[in-house]
Length: 428
Image (tube, rainbow, N blue to C red):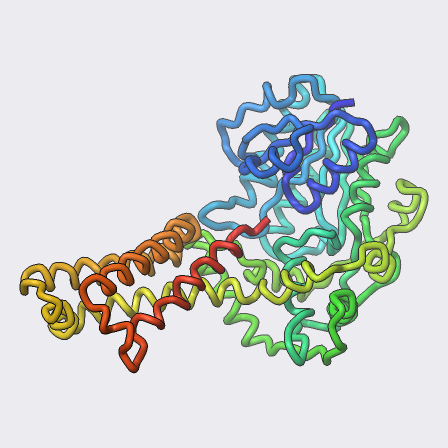
């Protein structure tokens, strides 16, 4: 059987792709960004396609496909994401293409609790299930709870970071019930769903039967990371709301933070489901938090990731502010800056041109670092400009290396921080 996994490069999709390959199935993958996925899983036939694109052509993607697993989804509307476009309109085009191509089986990966889920996320997920019910396909909806996986992205990455917080573990609504499921159990459910006689035209919650609170999950993850126990401290709602608004605003600069308002609303509502039907599908209950953690021991790399996760926005923010302020100071006090170059023999015109040009370059790099699409170029530019500054100073003002305030020496940590930022940029 050849199975198309839409969103096969994601956290859930990646686990499903690996399980399908291990089970001997042929696999095709589809998504917006599949370049790295193609390197990681060369046995998969990858297609670059946007679920929300009205002009997306599914015909070549579905060629030779027996069944489809749809893991594509968005968390919140934004400049790069449309909930209705992905969850509803995109699914409608996919269903139509499947019907036209003679692909009967479609497994839809949704989310537990969407029946009561607040806001546009839950509403579009419910619309998607209605759309499937009205189709002629042999469909099955899987609704996973909070997903645990060896890899981390979005909300799962944030939970690890909070669990690794020094001295205490901050949490919003720590007492809310959040039922979990391992990504490997989701993959096992997909494998079971593709067998003859599997359930059809129903929705199945994939959640561990034992309810867990968010505080218990965070405490479990902290121990899993090998860190000493720490108290779980409730974050005031007003602080969380301010953080969510900031994260919503950053989405317009291309940053998809797991702290956006939709995440907070979902967390406030909790994540619940009925795991009874999952037992019939899997032949056993979904594994709970303790069983999953025990089966996937963490190493030092998980601890590094958890500790560095919240430092990533700090690194980007500090670098952007540093270069912006540096450039603005040069524009506000050009005479003093030009005087430094005049001592080296620059003509007044050349000194002023160098100061203004350098200041504008600094400001441009700071602004570029704020946007997700240009931050990588900005970091490379920061290293290049720093190198040029140091080379020029060494040539024309070598005495500045011995300045008691360390005006040149202090630029080196900023360049190193840009290297660190480059290393932390990839989300998955």
